[in-house]
Image 1 (cartoon, rainbow, N blue to C red):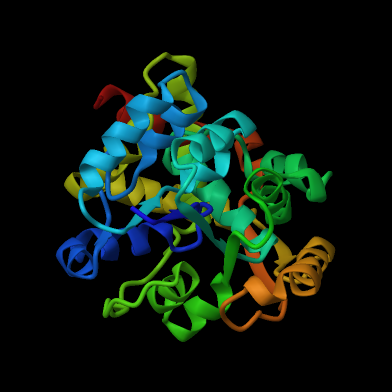
Image 2: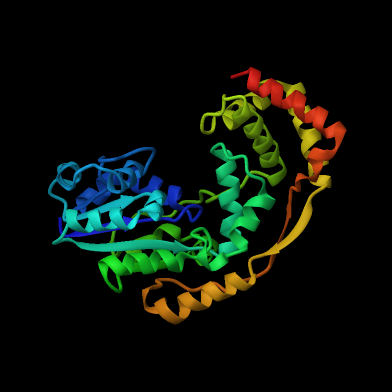
Length: 327
């Protein structure tokens, strides 16, 4: 192996879409001496590797697992949005594992405020119970220090360990708009394989009112000790599919939550503009596609005010109890 490509996402930038195409085209990649290996593999990506690097697994053990899986290929692609959580220890270990291999990091930059909404959405799907209002305040109060908002912090950490010009960036908004996310990834990774983009919708979001209901049930389930990852979301949708009366009750509650929603302008906030300028001024030569212009987008987001309405409290309690009892 001569080249190692670390695709670090981050979350909500088409990572699963890219991983799916890499997974489905392993043979085509192999024909070009590129491996998308099975080592540390979980659901399309190498999500277990972050834990191994940050944890106590030895350098020798990690090297052996990856090299045996890569075989004779000269290039290896490892992809996980969890790589964004690599600690200094994990990155230094990665460098020690492959001291003579050229390592390239591939990152997709997404407008921070848009990504933040998607991240909250994903957190709730995976069992989170923090309200959107709380989640936003936590990050927006110190945007430049937030790992969710400021990708420059990650780039600087990588450069401090691996040196300059090892991070290659793609603008997610431009790639998504042009429907060439995979083509842009290949350009950033410096690989030439004929893997075509598909018409698959990347990062399609569930309506936020519906996510708010799931968040509330996650909160109750957590207090009752029955929350396990995404089990509430899965049970909720199974009941919606099977029980028409439950589906109607949920739709009614969601519509009333939506009536109490607030509007929020995102997409061209101060930190959206600031981070775009930092990337443009300092990393232009490492950005492989057109840099998108921050544009305002208005969303209606669910406020926790709905939970103070006695009528909606009763409706939610019936739905929540039903979901939890189905586990």
